Amino acid sequence: MTGKVVNMLPKKQAIVQIGNQKLRAQLDASLTSGEHYLMQVKQINNNSVLKVISDRPLSSTENIIKVLKAVDKSPTALNISMVQQLINRG
Image 1 (cartoon, rainbow, N blue to C red):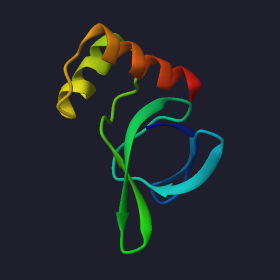
Image 2: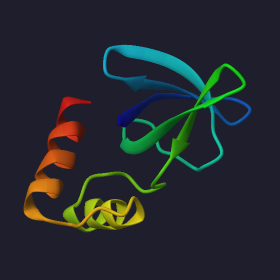
Image 3: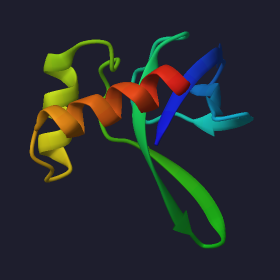
C-alpha cells in the first residue's frame, strides 16, 4: 500500500497517512514530508509495523519499476499503472 508522509516529528518519527487513516510511525528510513512511499504492513507481536519498500518517493516510472522488481512483480504496463493509481489515491 502507499503511504504519504504528512508531518515529520522528532526522534525519527512521522505522521503517515494511509488512505483516510493517519498514524504515528517510527522511521527506519529517511523519508520526506509530502511524498508518497510504497509500504508493507507487517504484524509483529500484536503491533502493526510499516516497512518502507522503497526509501525514494514514488513519483517517477523509473522508481515504480524498481519497487515492482523489489517485490518480485514484472514491470508490465498494467502493474505500473496500478501502482500509479495507488499513489494518486494517496
